[in-house]
Length: 240
Length: 196
Image (cartoon, rainbow over all chains, first blue to last red; front, side, top):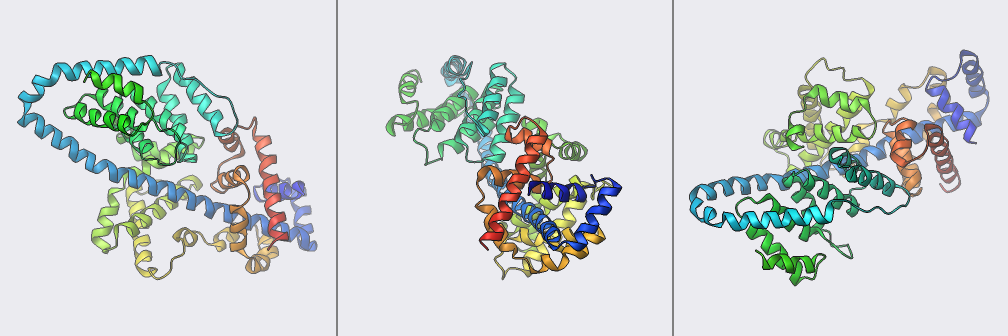
């Protein structure tokens, strides 16, 4: 059965010799079963193409949602600049403690995300394992490509989303890391969700004006809602 | 990374998409993101709801991907101009088809196009069979085929080679991917035949 479809595929993709091609076309005219198989093949390819496009469309629409989330953030950034200009003295006064908080966050990231552990299993997890391997070799950009590819295939893979956030954080690509951790934190279906805690850590490390206050709020949320990272959040909040 | 993505030229994006492999989707996404501002323009010009316009934009971008991969878009005009033309047509379609709720992707590709690409002998042998076929039923069986088989068949539908499918699904070689893919196709045929 498999052979028949393979011959059809080879015929359609021009992989048959002239002789084989003539023979196949003769059979096609005389044998209704072969014609039926060819019709199925064409139909299946068309169906696959349309279904793949539908799936891709959903993925692209998700990108649009993400950009829409990004746009207000640009206003937030612009507003921060205005605030810095207007109340510069206030932030200058606060700088030393913010810098300490940033160092604290950086130290936490260094200690906890220097090397990642892998779990072996099949499918997309193998790609994640490969990405983690690259990460542990400090090939962050390559690791990020792997995690992004997994996310494209499986937008709901929370582990890939977390790893993509961590690798963005390690590259000091804070805005992207915050976006990823924030999306992770919005997932209500996870047994244990580190998104809010990691978003707070990233804000602290980014250390823009207002970041410390926002991070503190998130850490308080981690503690009050008993989210993943509660113990660390308690230790950290004492230093803020 | 973000700065890097902003500096990608259309030529870079097209080369990245044509190169295939796991990076293809990333370049596709970057292309999508590069021209999302067209949606706002569509909303203003065609007075469509933002959702409808975003959907028309996604449809247009998907067609552009297909044309880049198949070589139908050769880069003779600017990519933005080409995308804009298709997007405008999709907006006009959206205005016309507001009454139907069928996924617009179904309309983006017609079965006739698939038939036209067949050699003459093959076309005449299958034309009437395809006209009588129950495509919706095939969609249904493909949807319920099981994750691995379905994703392999969808990748094939998107024009990925067996080598690329092997990389994406962690198979050892293109030959293994091809055998598995054809087996999945056979499984789909059995279900389509036996449970119409």
